[in-house]
Amino acid sequence: MKIAIIGTGNVGGALATKWAKKGHEIYLGVRDVNNFKGKELLANPNTQVLTIENAVATSEIILISTPATSAIDVAKSLGNTSGKIIIDTMNIVMGRGPEGYKNTTVAILDNTETNDVVKCFNTTGFNNMQNPDYNGTAIDVFVAGDSVKGKEIAIQLAKDAGFAECYNIGGNDKFELMEQFAWFWINLAMFQGQGRDIAFKLLKR
Ligand SMILES: NC(=O)c1ccc[n+]([C@@H]2O[C@H](COP(=O)([O-])OP(=O)(O)OC[C@H]3O[C@@H](n4cnc5c(N)ncnc54)[C@H](OP(=O)(O)O)[C@@H]3O)[C@@H](O)[C@H]2O)c1
Image 1 (tube, rainbow, N blue to C red):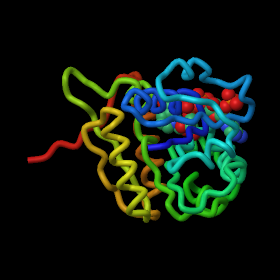
Image 2: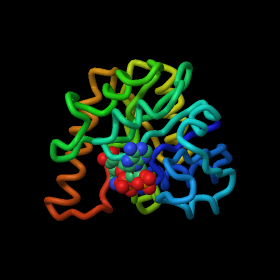
Image 3: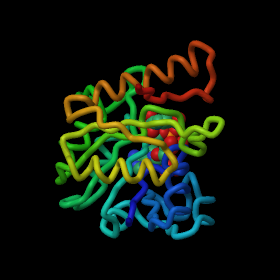
């Protein structure tokens, strides 16, 4: 798949690396092609850097992994997103997010042409995206959104990144729940002293 990565820091960099090595075509979409976080990603296979608008125009899938406070500006900077799928990884942390919104994904939906916007990869740390393996067991991630094709693609890309499963949490009404679940991980990792090497897995019998 052709994937634009908007936000080439911790999260965008980790997923771009996994997907590039899996054979996807990666277009890093940045504000300044000569000066951006994640320049080392250009050493990955199948990876190029473009302006944000050109990366979006070239791709079928758009990953947004910028700070939540920039969600509206970033959504408006994408250019024409008709027919494209957007995967939002962002979280409003400590109340810092797009003004007037309770979650970042609705802010993207309201400021782009596409309705195929899903939330995924936001519920775990970037270190778990770099390495989802815990002693031989791969961890899980989760996806929410009304877009059926958006969820299908996110689930495929989660598996391509090495996650065991990507569970469907529901529709657009679950975006906030996804951010709260991310906050649950952040609370355990950062504030309750468990550290970043923790992850969730759904057990069944
Ligand atoms: N860190 C985690 O473990 C983690 C886990 C799950 C979800 N998240 C969420 O994922 C998002 C990204 O986190 P991160 O840790 O990857 O952040 P990060 O390392 O600070 O990277 C942020 C990226 O966003 C870009 N950016 C900032 N403002 C922008 C704008 N207005 N337009 C275009 N690009 C812009 C930056 O580009 P420049 O180089 O041009 O500044 C940089 O590439 C956040 O919303 C966070 O809540 C983080």
